[in-house]
Amino acid sequence: MKIKFLGGAEEVGRLGIKITDRNTKVMVDYGVIPEKPPEFPLPPEKVDGIFLTHSHLDHCGNLPVYYQKYEAEFFATLMTANSVRPMLNDSIKVASLEGYPQPFSKDDISMLYQSFRNARYGETYELGDTNVTPYSAGHIPGSTMWKFENSTSTLVTGDLYTRETNLLNGALPVKADTLIMESTYAGREHEDRDAVVKRLRSRIKEVVETGGKIVLPSFAMGRTQELIMILEKLNLDVSVDGMGNLLSEIYLGTPGFLRSQADFRRASGRVRKIKGPHMRERALEDSDVIVTTSGMMDGGPVLSYVEQLLNDDRSAIFLTGYQVENTNGRSLLETGTLKIAGASVKPKTMLEFFDLSAHSGHSDLVQFVKSVDPKRIILCHGDSREELLPDLSEYEVILPVNGKEFEI
Ligand SMILES: [Zn+2]
Ligand SMILES: [Zn+2]
Image 1 (cartoon, rainbow, N blue to C red):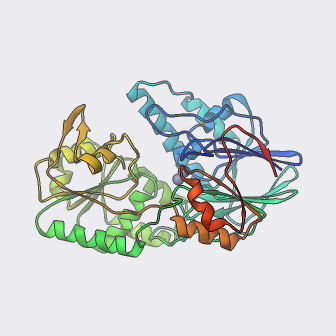
Image 2 (spheres, rainbow, N blue to C red):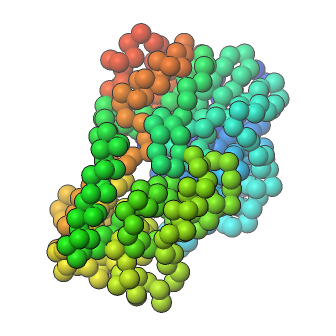
Image 3 (tube, protein in one colour):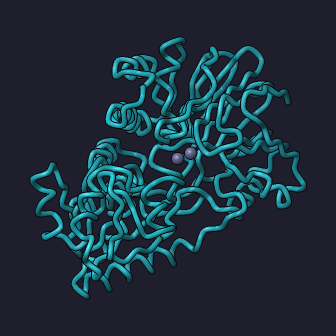
């Protein structure tokens, strides 16, 4: 079996893994580093099938470019397929707003769907001489680990989360000879999730009781919906703005992926959906809590809410997601300032961080490896992969580099 990373071996982003076993070539993911402008993986190489792990841009953001040059069957869960389209359309929109070239068009996105094959968790599909089975990766709804079986068996995790959340069950280990695993949090642990959720709920209550409002900048996919469920118990007036509302509709229209479709439907029915600027003006007045994109505060409706609260020291901004370098969210955490319409501002609002990450922490990654118990592990999608080596000393571990094919 031969493996080549077209991207994402040594970094978080632009993942593309080409696997050749006997007569079948497959590629897992083909993403970008979603910066401004984005960074791309190496050019596409011809394969028989593309297997998408999930709909975050670092995994799917460059897929339409592949179909400009080649054809290949496109395997994904229905939830992933339904969520990818708005993400790709949005990346075209962002590129034109920011004024940098976008390598694909809406027509290219449509091409992708002409090759779509709906893959259901636990069912096995044939592609040439390879058998392929998808399993839930626990990361966001529809996220998939792919198991390939030919001369040998290989499990590719994509982004991985093994603990239960309000929205999803954690990923379960699947036996395989070779494990290709993400390592975003190598060397770092998360605070206990139940404790974080408890602290978040109680801080929100305190702020509201003293007459303040809370803005929760949130990723549209997965995080917005998890927050909707976390907030339900508090019985507050919650508004949701931005692309999260569209993703919630997709989640409700694509049954079979959430821990409880009924629970999410009920929680989602209790929030006000902000549709357009006319509702946005009144939203702060009417709400205790606003959940809104973008999660790193680099655009989207979140900035208009922050702008209205700039001088309100009773109100708060609570960040719940990782803030990438050079984003407004990171700048706010590190310096207390952010940029709105080009101007640097220093909000008087309270600012706190709650770690609701959907990536497994260091110990959970090690535990996952031990449960899979593979012959070898290939670590990718991380910039501190070596940190896992001491805890995986009884295994053969490979740290691949982009562009260099190797054989196992
Ligand atoms: Zn992801
Ligand atoms: Zn990722």
